[in-house]
Length: 144
Image (cartoon, rainbow, N blue to C red; front, top):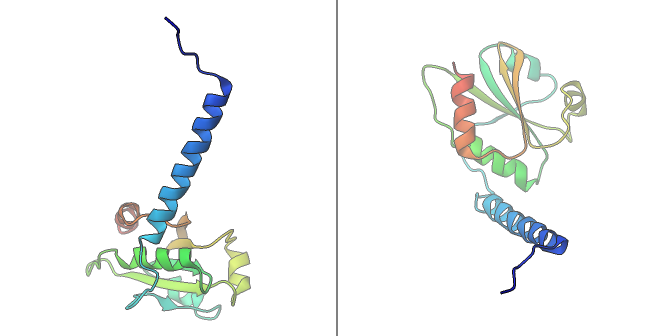
């Protein structure tokens, strides 16, 4: 009776197949979120209003680029977070194409990026598109 032995090319083939499946599933997951963000709770900021807006309370600041599907999806996910009347959370967004100084000051390496401020100090940084379930955990941590 012949025994089957794994060869190096078997592992290479498995790696390629795994990469393809992961890419397809990731693309499907991102595309399953609606692109258009209607009734957004985000307030547009600029370089003059930024410091005053984040100086008090807790605020989520989305650094984004116009016409970016990933940024729209992240804004949609953030809009799905619960509204807590006890702990007022402010939601802001800044277009980094228009306000390069803030992008450089806060060392934004890519979009979408979310900075969470508490009383004017950066408490947390989120890079990329995060699922709604993970955002709820981050939200709960930020409101404590």
